[in-house]
Image (cartoon, rainbow, N blue to C red; front, side):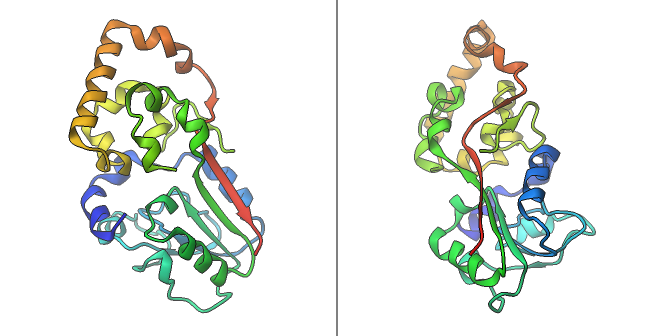
Length: 230
């Protein structure tokens, strides 16, 4: 996804996309004892580990403007052309961002180039996502858009499939605006899926099929934390 696209859809991002502490703990553990961290596609600063020397890279000015006071210093650049020397950081990380890059292979190669040690990437495996009610029953087109970290119940980070236990939230345009997948579907696809979801919620059909998910502790929706030691 282009810088201009995130300048458009990033408005109000931090209101919906807050880091979930349970996911954050897994990322922090994956980084091991690394002290200096490069966060690529850093956005508004979610999941940047505390107590480490973090440098952020983000192409979108709108996303950069939403970084909170005291956040890590940020460089406006793209993953495919990181403006750092080889082996500049102990580790590099990227969270729920690789599927937006113009050239993911080039971006991952750049992460490996600038990291002396680990590269940790939080991304999606499409296989479990295909069976999620939201994709299978209402928005199958999302599998063409997105390509083991179970997403916890009432996840604080409101990305598309993290709301597996709170279907009503997808009806809120502010919530939808904060996930890129909604901006990549045609308006008629969105309206058709939302109409079906709204009708199933009102009739009780959704709860008949999926109501058990409202109290499930977590669900595998395809979120994966990949750790490599180049």
